[in-house]
Image (cartoon, rainbow, N blue to C red; front, top):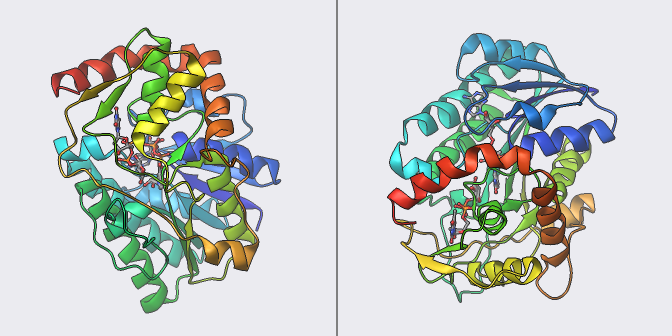
Length: 331
Ligand code: NAD
Ligand code: TDX
């Protein structure tokens, strides 16, 4: 296995994955529709072939399958807040796009790895000890997570009904370089860098099991190389004790910012996500590298803040537009 087709490779996690995979010696084709979330600058200077197109188009899905030995499927509409405003692109890309790629992978005898999320499991109470694992029942809350859940079910059906050689991973919230400024952590960093006040939804007591994007992507490469076909792996970095309030306070401390403000809460806001990643740790020996005892996030946030400081040209052109859309919603 030397040639990977990476869908969504111009987005946040996909473009960091391209870098990690190039480091491990793979040849790469990126298939991306370059939506608002896909950025050509994310691939600048990298030795990759790029096919521009929509994975829900059967012809693009066929070309994706014919370019590699394995499809790694990152392409998705990924932002919960956007899915509350207009769910239709989520249904098209996340469900129909995954369907077309599965059909193309099957017809062309190509291995498939599906990138999914812990949000398909719904949410946990703030203080319950339970975590999500590979056997947790699906209970998605938002149009985004419901369409990701639908795509996961398709993958499992294609494995069982048609014998597709596929694997899947469900990861917790990622952060790191090249994440769109609509998302929580880059939004706050760039708020501070552009003289705005960081914005916390509601109480800020919600918990996300934050993981640095490079740790997620190393896990995906381990699954591609050593994972068992037909299996799902849950990926997380054991940060399920850190709430949004603590994350924003740490960002303010690291950046010397005076404080933050509470804004309107998200409708149907999931309270807590927590991942039990013992399967991938025990079977494949994977471990996150960005960890520290205090919050588990200090070193990863320092790395991320440094990237946004050094790459203002990357985020500045879209920042005002994103903030005016949030302002219209009282956020
Ligand atoms: P992103 O929004 O930053 O990037 C998505 C990419 O997909 C963009 O390059 C976009 O242009 C492309 N794309 C969108 N629709 C497309 C289509 N129809 N055809 C081809 N390309 C299309 O997303 P991200 O945060 O990098 O997430 C990548 C994947 O990881 C998604 O499947 C997401 O569900 C999953 N995931 C994300 C997180 C997270 O915290 N961000 C956590 C777990 C899982
Ligand atoms: O300005 C903000 N203030 C705030 O308090 C924003 C944008 C978010 N939040 C809160 C909402 C969530 O509790 O921060 C938390 C994280 O929000 P997002 O970055 O929007 O992520 P989330 O909705 O948790 O989903 C993310 O993780 C799982 C990704 O966007 C998904 O693609 C992934 O599947």
